[in-house]
Length: 571
Image (cartoon, rainbow, N blue to C red; front, side, top):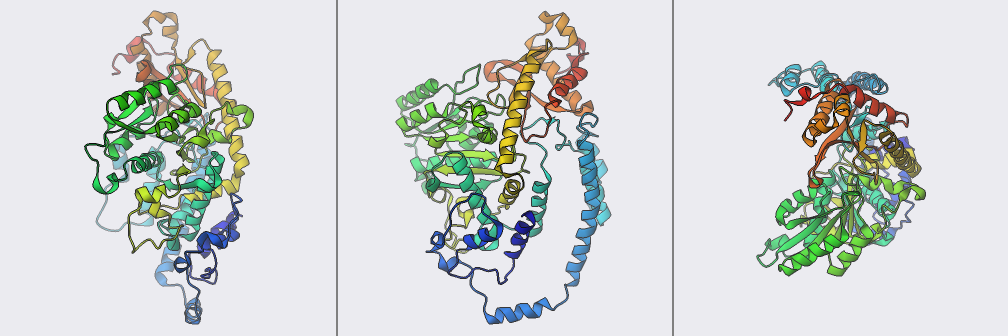
C-alpha cells in the first residue's frame, strides 16, 4: 500500500495518461489510486463548478512529444545527480542505522555524545567557503550533526513534547523533499493537497465535529495554528480590521487559561491587539484547569470597562501540568456572550484515541468548540512539523480571514488549500500523517494513547511509593510532575528550601545533558509559586512499561550526592 501511495505521488506529478479529464473529479481520481483514509463518500459534485480549473486532457500532439521524449537518453546532469543521490543515500544510511543501534540501547547510551558549545560545533564543521565542496565534505558535516545533537530518537529523550519519529515518517519526509511540491495550489501538488483535505476531514470527525461543517489547514507548528484561530475570531467580530486595521472604538479583549502555551500571548501580539488584552484566567492549583466561574467574571469585568470580548482559548493538555479544561462548561459561557471558543489540543489531542474507559471525560464538549489545533508530531510521533487547525461549523471562515486575491495563483479550486493559509510556501505535511495512518492505522494510535496512560499510572504509583520523590499534582493526561530530594536533604529537610529545591533540579538536569541516559524537562510554575520540578511527558509509545522505574533510578544516580555546596554557584 505504501509503495502504491508513493508511486501515485510520482505519477500525478507527471503529465501522463493518468491526468483526469475535465469531467472527472481530480480528488476522486487520486483517492481511487491511493485509497481513502476516512471512508468519505466522494462524487463529481465536489468540483462540478470548477471544470475550468481541472487539468486538461492530453491531445495527440502532447502524446507524440511524450513518445519522442521517452526515447531520449537521460540527460547527463540528471545521471550525475542520480549517482550523487545514490552514493549519499548509501553513506548516510550507514550513519542512520548506527543511530538506530545507539538509540536502541537506551540504558547504556548517553542522550548526547558531545554536548558542545557553539564554538566547538563550528570548529568541527569548519568555515563555509566560496568554492564548491565534495560529497565527502557534506558527509563530514552530517557526521557533526549526529555527534553534537541530542538523540531525539532515544526512548528517554523526554525533555520536550515530541519524540523520535518512525521509519515511515522519515521516508515520507524524504519523498516530500525529492518531489519538492508546494501545497499552495492543486495543480502543482495534487496528491499532497488531496491528502491534506482528507486528513483534516477525518480528524475533524474524530474530534466530534459535524461532518458537513469541517474545514481546516495544516500549518508549520502549533503556534501558527493557534495564531490562525485568533485571526479567524478577530475577522468574525471585527471584519474591518483585515482591510482598515484596528479602530479606537474596537477595544478587543480575549481570554486564555493561565496554563496555556505562550503562543496564545504571541498570537495576541501578532494580530495587533496586544499581550495586555489577552487576559489570563485563574486556574485550580490541584488540576491546573481554567476556573469557568473565574472566566465568566473576567468577561463581565471587561464588558463593564467598555471592552469587546471575542475569543476564549481553552487547553486540552497543557504544556507543563497536562491540564484539560472543562470544555463543556466553558462552551456554555462562550455561547452566552457570543465568544469564539478555541481548544488548544496540540499536546493532549492524541489522547482522543484513548479507549472509552480511559477517557475520563477529557474531551467532553469538544464538539461545541469553534476550532481546535492539534500536533500529530507530538503524541503520535509523526515527524516535525505536522500541525493542523480544524474549524467547526465555520465554513468559509479561513478564506474570509486569510484569503488575498491573487489571480495569478488561485483559480477558484477548493483544493487550492494555500488560499486558506498565511503561507505561500507550504510543505506537503499531510504525506507523513497519511502514511503513518496507512502504516499503523487508527488502531495503532489508540494503542499509543492507552499505553501512555497506563505508563502514567505506573509512574505515578512509583513516585508515591518512593520517599525521595514527591508528586506535584495528580496527572490529568500523561504529564507526570514530581520533585526529587537528594540524600543530604532527606536527612536535613529543613534546609531544603524552595530556592535550593529549584537549584537541585537545575543541576540534575545539567548532569542529564552531560552524563545521563535520559533527559527530563525541569521547570518552575510561577503562577502557583512552585519551585523547579521534573515534568515527565509521555507520548508516541517510545518507552516500555519497565522503563518508568529506570527513569527514577537514573535521577537518583545523578542527584543523590548533591549537597548545599554543589548548588551555591547556581543562579
